[in-house]
Length: 314
Image 1 (cartoon, rainbow, N blue to C red):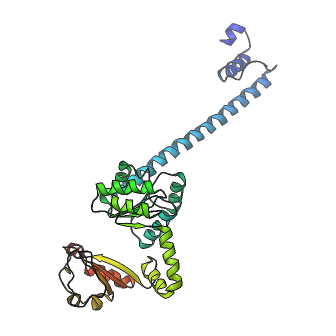
Image 2 (spheres, one colour):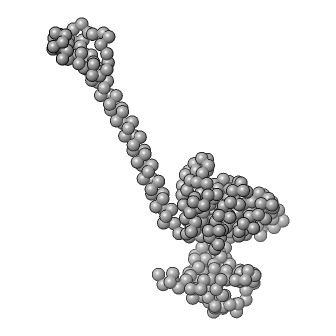
Image 3 (cartoon, rainbow, N blue to C red):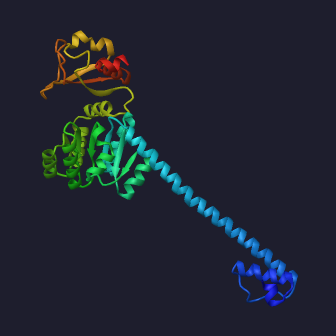
């Protein structure tokens, strides 16, 4: 078209076509074919570089979006498969310490929080996390509340913990719920809302520090047996279920010490009372909770002894 309208040589017309299509402009037209050829080569090289860079950027963005979507889908599938897990609502200083103990005990758990620093900390610790406000019912159900074994309301806010306990208790009357409280007023309200146990961090810390001074050896012993990473001695509680073959038998009949090596230190009866020195002829009924102490292997043997019949058979 340029050749026909401007009556120029073929190569100069080709040059005009290139700079017009590429939008590089015609303000300065080289005087000879060699200059025009060099300009065409530079234009082609520039377009190639720009095109390649654009393709790399688009691929990186789309790849990140796709990989992020796949990771999110895998996380959702993992959450859907959780059973008998614990939900930690709030991943602050208390929540992170709870998660440390759960990891050490090798029990399944997930974190429910929406604060950026908490989400970042959970990801850094390798914790499974549901991003959302724990005070909203739909987020508790996203965390598998109906399949959970227990819930820890560990937020720094008493109001948030109260909402969480109310929501969880109304949805799961049988769920074990432990809540954090900043003071006695909040403790009373959380108890009314349905929390099974309430922990006041400052009160607990003060009690532990006093006992470290007054009863250092007792405190050291309790610390060993109640820490999941305790190397030699652990304390465990085992609920006697109706399907357990041990239900209704006495400690003597079960030969607990001989069969497992563990020592029964206390028995919480179904009515809530404690027998701190159970006799050999004490019957162990359905709903009772056995508290035993022993090495990790002895504790596992004790759990097997009281396991439901179908579990043992499997």
